[in-house]
Image 1 (cartoon, rainbow, N blue to C red):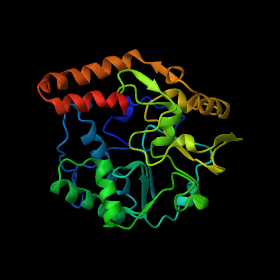
Image 2: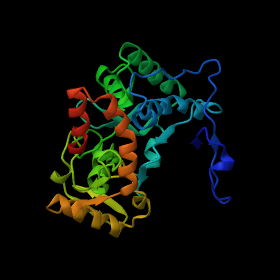
Image 3: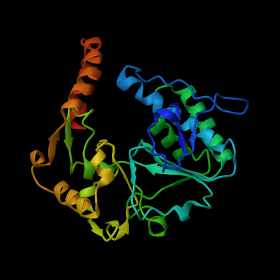
Length: 295
């Protein structure tokens, strides 16, 4: 199922591909509208508001079946052949990943039924009303810490609870390590082999290897990779390609692990220049913007 505000006729799907395209709700009675965040709308065309709105658009998935289990997958998440769909059939709790000490992620989000989704959205709305500076990552983390809904973390590293039962699921750090930084946020540079600044663990501390169709972390299967760099070639990589990515990520000098994407550099400049101009007299803003290249 694809929930989108783009007409199906413009999506370009092959006639052989059976996709249930659903438009987001027009908020009839019972639906929860997304609140407005306090984030800068100039940044990437309102990026943070859009990612937040996406969670509320998930209500459309339950219009014809309120008891279905929803496995929400962000468009930049690669599902590997080992992905355990059967494990989530009878999910009992809302589940997502913990990236770091203050940030969670809905790259893979498990919703057991409509009631559970509405509980999560109500909490998100309440938190943002109290603090408009939140976004989906920080608000989800607050919900998890407060235990205000029935929630469970998806394992991301072998030490996490549940890792031996279902395996591991990437919130962003693994895909960031293997497929690089988002070049739009790093002035055109895609750098592999780096640890995300938000990450609660260092990927290079673990043994990654490909065995058959499985990507293993210290012997446990990693079922997803969050390709935050938007490297489209990740979605056609063979197991041999992934093994080569592992070897490249573990190389020495950063220069050997860096590529430059001209279109991403132009995008970055178009985004950042208006912000720089309006922030020209703010020392803290300049530090924040320049610091992104070292994140």
